[in-house]
Image 1 (cartoon, rainbow, N blue to C red):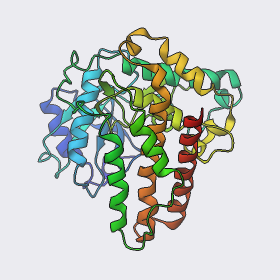
Image 2: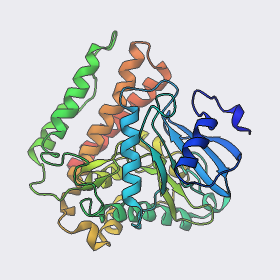
Image 3: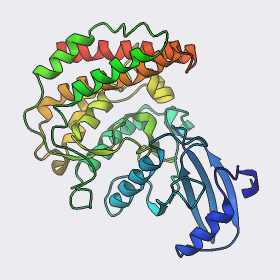
Image 4: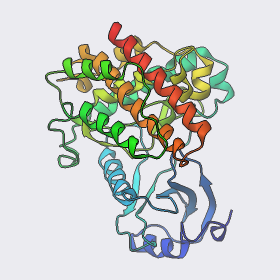
Length: 354
């Protein structure tokens, strides 16, 4: 594909060339230009220039209220992770000034050579349960690498508001759920166990925890795996990153982990359907192998984090269900996500029951 075949309203390659030249990046014509599919509405375009490969990331055609700020935060986190062993795309250069390209912040990162196992499985991975088992363990290992990063040492001491992070979670998300009632036609949440789960979370909140970098949406669909083995090539889609309690990322992984017959397993796609994955207990044990990730963190409270993840994700997905009633999302999508919400709350109750 040629640069002129990309919508200039999204990526103006003339502007991009001038900006890259100003950054001291290799010059020359743009080659091998390919739009990439991603897990969000953000625009991803891969290209080659001056003998180097890049992926450009910017917001969608119709920028949302916080899109540019989110892109600035993503770029800052990726820059901070450079020099760590966290598998993530490496930031090459960022343009935080939205005036450069028609109102959009953008950045350039290294391409990831790999695949998304929630979309498709290569023959090597689909045909070998031992490979899939290691893929599961490596999801926990990649997360523990992130949990081991000292956010202050990498320049992110002011990146979030960790004070009171756990204390405000239940109220924050109950308020989010309440806000859906403003949508025309939405009858209100019909989520069995909602109040019981909220009360349990408030009554059993961990008393101490150690802040760190949180991905904020850590599940199999946001991992890229190596084409030739079970290694995690990169954690992607850092839109929700903040400084909070990294054990919530581990809880998120448990909340979304594929279990036969559970609607939430739909989030894992082909890898979840193929099976052969480690158990939730094995994920926690693998995470715990890395001492610098768990130092100062109480893994004995992991059930609480898994329940909170079910609670939070269920409420997030219910938002699409509510928007579907108002004609702002397809009914089929709303119904599907509502069924996943119900499955997440059943899983939360199962976690509580032990």
